[in-house]
Length: 90
Image 1 (spheres, one colour):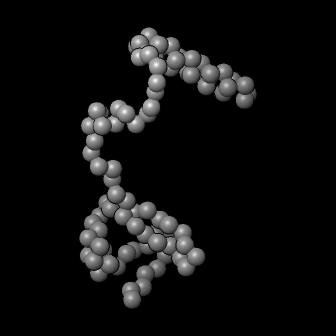
Image 2 (cartoon, one colour; image 1 turned 90 degrees about the vertical axis):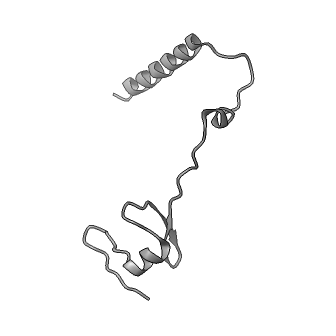
Image 3 (tube, helix red, strand yellow; image 1 turned 135 degrees about the vertical axis):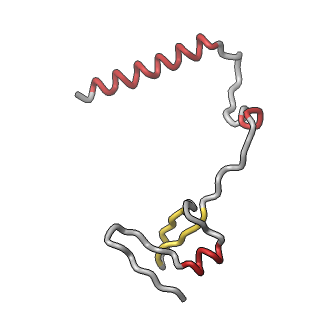
């Protein structure tokens, strides 16, 4: 069992033997999971590459196709709503 210390900045050095065992290199993103016994570190797995055609069906919409003008109008409406809500806060 390896030991490490928590620095004054909240940093922990993962011992080289553990990094090597898990094939972790500098820059590896880790997910931090709080457990009853302590903290679990798991490698973050990037989403697999996907094409636009594969992702296009993710958001379901039924109805007629929207025009660019419809989309621009909806974006402007949303921007106006955000602006109006932020004005109400002051």
